[in-house]
Structure formats: C-alpha cells, structure tokens
Length: 441
Image (tube, rainbow, N blue to C red; front, side, top):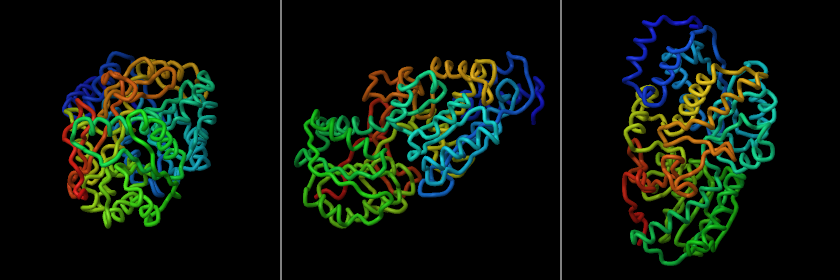
C-alpha cells in the first residue's frame, strides 16, 4: 500500500475515477498533480474527532464515512504525491470540551496526524484549538461557531492553520428574518401578525442563533414576542408549547437542534397547532426527524449551510454516497468531511506534501493554499475569508453565489420519502416552492 504505483496503474485509476463523484470534486486534479510530480512512498495519518456514540451519533457516523470515502478516492488517484492516506476517527461522544480536546491530543501524540478533518463538535468551545496550534498541524471543522471568528482574530498567527469550513451559527439567526420577509413579500405566506416566538436550546450554539434572530427581526418588521430557554436534551415540550399557543405567533423558531428532540416538539405541537410557521434549527434536515415525527413533520422548515445542492454535482455525490453506504445514509453531513479532505489534499499536494506535527513551515504553506484556492463542493463554493479563516454565507453576507456558501432554507414535503426535504430558498438553487403548512386553518 505504501509503495509508489506504476504509471499504468495511475492511468487505469484515473479512467475509473472519471466516472465517479471523485472526478468532479478533485480526484482528477490530484491525479494530474501526482503524475507531474516525483512519486514517493509512505503513508499520511489523518485524524478526526466525531460523535460515534451519544445524541449526535447520527451525524458523527456520516462524518466518519465522508472522510473515509474521500481518502479511498484520493488514494486511488495516487494519494498525495504518492503517499497514501490513513484515516483514524476517535469518538468525541457528547462533544464536551474535555472529550474533544483529549481526542485531539491523542490524534497528535499517538497517531501523529498531519491534519484533523472534522465535522462538528459544538460543545468544545475551541478547547481543542491550543493543543492543535501547539502541534502546528492543519485543522478543518464545521463547528459553526462565532467563537471561531473570535479565537482566530485574537491571534491569527497562532491559529493560522485552523479553519472553519462553514459560516458561523450567528448567520443562521441573521438569515431567518431575511427568508421570512422574502416569503411574505412574495405573497405566498400571509401572516396574521408579525410575532416570532423563540424557543432556545441551552447550548451556546442555539443561544447565539436566537440572539441574532432577536437583533435582526425588527429590521424586517418582525418582533420577538416570546422567549424561553429549554434544557438540552429535552423531549417533553408541553409546558413551553402551552405558552407559545397563548402567544399565537406568526412564526415559531426553535433553535435547539437534536433531531429526536425536535421531532417530539413537532408531534406535540401538531396535537393542537396554531397558524404559525415552524422553523427548527438543522435537526429536521436529518431523516431521523421525519421518521420519528411522521406526517406531523410535513411543512416544517429548517436550514443549513452544508446541505447538498440539487444540481448535477450535488446529485452525483448523493448517488455515489448512497451506492457506497446505502440509501438510508445521510449524505449531507458526509459531504462536509468528504469535501474538507479533498480541499486539504489538493492544497497539500500543491505545497509539495503534508506536514507532520511540529513541521510549522510546511503546514503554513498548506494553510496559505487553503486560503488562496476555493473548492467547489457538493454544497457550493468552499472559500475561506482571510479575516476569519472561515466560510461566509450567500446571500446573507456575500451577494456573489460563486464566492460563498449558500444559506439553504428547506421545507419538509414528504416525510416518507428517501429525502423528505426540498430546497425552497435561495435562488438559483431552489428546487421547490414554499407551501403553507397543512396544519394551518
């Protein structure tokens, strides 16, 4: 596995990859770089911290799958300058700061990982940044945290190799009133009032989103008329729902994000619904939400910035992912780590190779390439804003869809379908139109 491959083997593999999702997302580029450069032997350890157990394991398993799928394709294209990738995923369990930072140290000290390619660990609160910065390796994640912006800007030199491959959660809160205003101005939704009821999960991720909704809502003629913080996790929503029903808002925005918990919220809401749009953060995008909520899920809205686009490249990736892991697999979270791995591999190949822990000079070259070159992923353009080392959203911040990651608004259309959700915003990515939820009287 560690030996350099002959030119004939590379040629046959390139022909094979030309018919796969890998060719569209970077395998062809890597194969060309590998062929043009002197080949070497050896392996490259790649690390990951993912929730393989705990309440977020549904995503963690897919983060592991996406990384492994990319590594297999990259290795088939010649690896990184002839060296083969060896991924190792450690369980970050409940995603606490202690669990995540301990896993990061283990990946560095025992496995000598050249890079850590992650999904999200929302409870870590940047605790893993310092041991990774001390090692000087590249770290790419989807923690979706405004805390990343703050940490990076506090010391850009120290954290130069740490990247957040999606926009911060703050922009979810900024974007929701924008999207609601668009539905209202189009006349497809005629609210009875301008009230938004906020139900906030107790994690910082949810709090930041709710705060941004509260700050942004008045700019678009909405007011936050009700707020309550709920513990995480929670499955009994009766008390808070009684208060929400008494408020009778035009919109219920629940920023808790565990899919099973949100499914219980929707089932209990559907027992006595109000004429309110229901928006929930992220959880309804996973099939587990619709499986639990059943027909009550129809009409619920949710959003993401790492959702696979319904275009040629997105559909191609989804089909390839399902072919490998089965149609019950959630391709969207898998696409995140898959794309991160490709972007890193191309940046490292162009820099002349990867850098082990302590090789600060080589890893800085890779970091510079990650900032310099954007990458077309299944969910849109992955491009890092240099002032944050993070992606920015379209259209909330960037008006150019080719330079930012689209903030996608979905609505559950068919809870029993293999993909229950349909993308309704923004243009030009939308594949379906908004529909008034069936619980409206």
